[in-house]
Image (cartoon, rainbow, N blue to C red; front, top):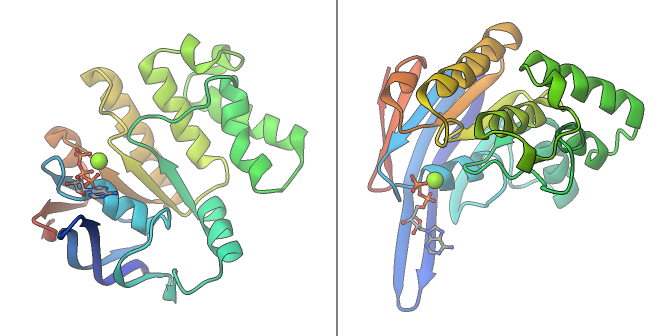
Length: 226
Ligand SMILES: Nc1ncnc2c1ncn2[C@@H]1O[C@H](COP(=O)(O)OP(=O)(O)OP(=O)(O)O)[C@@H](O)[C@H]1O
Ligand SMILES: [Mg+2]
């Protein structure tokens, strides 16, 4: 069943007199439970594409459909709820809030999402962190965690609201190869257990080869290899 579809998505930026074309009419269809690697040179538009799929950014033209519904024709409240409830986002750098502990960082989406039950959010955040081996680090601030621990924390934060799709922008970029493999294993387990659709930007060929679909971005377009 189709999960996400892009139809002629373009993104361009105006820079002085010239126009920078980053996405040049992307057509793409991703099914529920697909695991997708997005690869391509620096500047190829990978983060731009991921941000548009996660509704963090709008296309200049074209349409994005989520379960056959047009994403960007929704009003701002619905878009915010979509980002909070349906999509988990792991950013290129982890974006944890430095003044909050690990467990508080993981709880944040639930508090922002307004479900409001502090105790239940704390319990779920604790379980998620224990699942990724951070049970002894709940009260550590990001600065008191290793790079891999910060990344695992950012991943479980993205899972807090039980998203249907996880978008991860180089989740293993700053990790040594063993920790990177562990993080990938975790993501693929999530896909198996909960059928979460995965879209992962990565420069790591070994990890990309474990995904069912590989998209290579080049000159604003996409080449698919399965
Ligand atoms: N606000 C902006 N104004 C103008 N150009 C921009 C803007 N944001 C991004 N770009 C350009 O869009 C292109 C794509 O950027 P993007 O971040 O999507 O690349 P990427 O494939 O994720 O690269 P990397 O692997 O380095 O993270 C880059 O050439 C960038 O300079
Ligand atoms: Mg990027």
